[in-house]
Image (tube, rainbow, N blue to C red; front, side, top):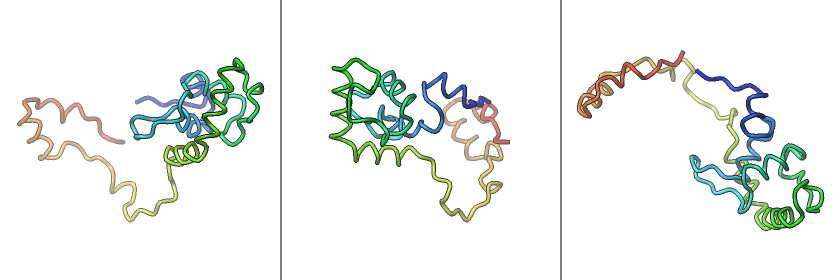
Length: 137
Protein backbone atom coordinates (compact mmCIF):
# COMPACT_ATOMS: atom_id res chain seq x y z
CA UNK A 1 0.00 0.00 0.00
CA UNK A 2 1.48 3.33 -1.06
CA UNK A 3 0.36 6.61 0.45
CA UNK A 4 1.64 9.80 -1.11
CA UNK A 5 1.56 12.84 1.14
CA UNK A 6 1.79 16.48 0.05
CA UNK A 7 5.58 16.38 -0.24
CA UNK A 8 5.36 13.18 -2.27
CA UNK A 9 2.95 14.83 -4.73
CA UNK A 10 5.28 17.80 -5.10
CA UNK A 11 8.26 15.49 -5.68
CA UNK A 12 6.39 13.42 -8.26
CA UNK A 13 4.53 16.14 -10.19
CA UNK A 14 6.29 19.37 -9.25
CA UNK A 15 3.08 20.96 -7.96
CA UNK A 16 1.09 20.96 -4.73
CA UNK A 17 -1.93 18.64 -4.43
CA UNK A 18 -4.33 21.57 -4.86
CA UNK A 19 -2.93 22.07 -8.38
CA UNK A 20 -3.20 18.45 -9.56
CA UNK A 21 -6.56 18.90 -11.36
CA UNK A 22 -5.10 21.93 -13.18
CA UNK A 23 -1.93 19.96 -13.97
CA UNK A 24 -3.91 17.05 -15.43
CA UNK A 25 -6.11 19.46 -17.40
CA UNK A 26 -3.07 21.00 -19.07
CA UNK A 27 -0.93 17.90 -19.68
CA UNK A 28 -3.87 15.55 -20.32
CA UNK A 29 -4.74 12.20 -18.85
CA UNK A 30 -4.89 9.22 -21.19
CA UNK A 31 -6.42 7.04 -18.47
CA UNK A 32 -9.43 9.34 -18.29
CA UNK A 33 -9.45 10.10 -22.00
CA UNK A 34 -8.79 13.81 -22.32
CA UNK A 35 -5.86 15.18 -24.30
CA UNK A 36 -4.82 18.26 -22.36
CA UNK A 37 -3.71 21.46 -24.07
CA UNK A 38 -1.26 21.24 -26.95
CA UNK A 39 2.30 22.08 -25.97
CA UNK A 40 1.73 21.86 -22.23
CA UNK A 41 4.12 19.12 -21.13
CA UNK A 42 4.87 17.97 -17.62
CA UNK A 43 7.90 20.22 -17.05
CA UNK A 44 6.40 23.45 -18.38
CA UNK A 45 3.13 22.81 -16.58
CA UNK A 46 4.88 22.08 -13.28
CA UNK A 47 6.99 25.24 -13.59
CA UNK A 48 3.97 27.43 -14.31
CA UNK A 49 1.58 25.89 -11.78
CA UNK A 50 4.20 25.85 -9.01
CA UNK A 51 4.12 29.62 -9.33
CA UNK A 52 0.48 30.35 -10.25
CA UNK A 53 -1.40 27.32 -8.76
CA UNK A 54 -4.49 27.38 -11.03
CA UNK A 55 -5.35 27.82 -14.70
CA UNK A 56 -7.22 31.08 -14.14
CA UNK A 57 -4.17 32.58 -12.45
CA UNK A 58 -1.81 31.95 -15.36
CA UNK A 59 -0.99 35.40 -16.78
CA UNK A 60 -1.57 36.29 -20.41
CA UNK A 61 1.83 37.98 -20.46
CA UNK A 62 4.35 35.28 -21.48
CA UNK A 63 7.25 37.10 -19.82
CA UNK A 64 5.73 36.34 -16.40
CA UNK A 65 5.69 32.54 -16.79
CA UNK A 66 9.34 31.98 -15.90
CA UNK A 67 10.07 30.14 -19.15
CA UNK A 68 11.87 31.11 -22.33
CA UNK A 69 9.86 33.81 -24.11
CA UNK A 70 9.26 31.80 -27.29
CA UNK A 71 8.08 28.75 -25.38
CA UNK A 72 5.99 30.84 -23.00
CA UNK A 73 4.34 32.70 -25.89
CA UNK A 74 3.29 29.43 -27.50
CA UNK A 75 1.90 28.10 -24.23
CA UNK A 76 -0.07 31.25 -23.50
CA UNK A 77 -1.51 31.30 -27.03
CA UNK A 78 -2.49 27.63 -26.85
CA UNK A 79 -4.08 28.09 -23.45
CA UNK A 80 -6.05 31.15 -24.53
CA UNK A 81 -7.31 29.36 -27.65
CA UNK A 82 -8.37 26.35 -25.58
CA UNK A 83 -9.27 27.97 -22.27
CA UNK A 84 -12.79 26.51 -22.07
CA UNK A 85 -11.43 23.03 -22.78
CA UNK A 86 -8.79 23.46 -20.08
CA UNK A 87 -11.50 24.29 -17.55
CA UNK A 88 -13.58 21.33 -18.73
CA UNK A 89 -10.60 18.97 -18.47
CA UNK A 90 -9.94 20.25 -14.94
CA UNK A 91 -13.54 19.54 -13.98
CA UNK A 92 -13.24 16.04 -15.43
CA UNK A 93 -10.07 15.40 -13.42
CA UNK A 94 -11.59 16.51 -10.11
CA UNK A 95 -12.90 13.82 -7.80
CA UNK A 96 -16.48 14.50 -6.82
CA UNK A 97 -17.37 13.99 -3.18
CA UNK A 98 -20.88 15.40 -3.35
CA UNK A 99 -22.48 12.59 -5.35
CA UNK A 100 -25.26 10.90 -3.38
CA UNK A 101 -24.84 7.14 -3.05
CA UNK A 102 -27.43 4.74 -1.71
CA UNK A 103 -24.64 2.35 -0.73
CA UNK A 104 -22.59 2.80 2.39
CA UNK A 105 -18.82 2.43 2.24
CA UNK A 106 -19.04 -0.99 3.86
CA UNK A 107 -21.43 -2.13 1.10
CA UNK A 108 -18.69 -1.42 -1.44
CA UNK A 109 -15.98 -3.28 0.46
CA UNK A 110 -14.18 -5.99 -1.51
CA UNK A 111 -14.77 -9.21 0.35
CA UNK A 112 -12.36 -11.43 -1.48
CA UNK A 113 -12.38 -13.60 -4.55
CA UNK A 114 -15.90 -14.60 -5.37
CA UNK A 115 -16.57 -18.00 -6.97
CA UNK A 116 -17.13 -16.31 -10.34
CA UNK A 117 -13.66 -14.73 -10.23
CA UNK A 118 -12.15 -18.08 -9.30
CA UNK A 119 -13.98 -19.72 -12.20
CA UNK A 120 -12.79 -17.11 -14.71
CA UNK A 121 -9.22 -17.41 -13.47
CA UNK A 122 -9.44 -21.20 -13.74
CA UNK A 123 -10.67 -20.84 -17.33
CA UNK A 124 -7.77 -18.48 -18.06
CA UNK A 125 -5.34 -20.96 -16.57
CA UNK A 126 -4.15 -18.88 -13.63
CA UNK A 127 -5.74 -19.86 -10.36
CA UNK A 128 -3.24 -17.78 -8.36
CA UNK A 129 -4.88 -14.45 -9.23
CA UNK A 130 -7.70 -14.58 -6.62
CA UNK A 131 -5.16 -15.09 -3.84
CA UNK A 132 -3.03 -12.20 -5.14
CA UNK A 133 -5.91 -9.72 -5.23
CA UNK A 134 -5.54 -7.71 -2.01
CA UNK A 135 -8.53 -7.14 0.20
CA UNK A 136 -9.61 -3.55 0.72
CA UNK A 137 -9.23 -2.95 4.42
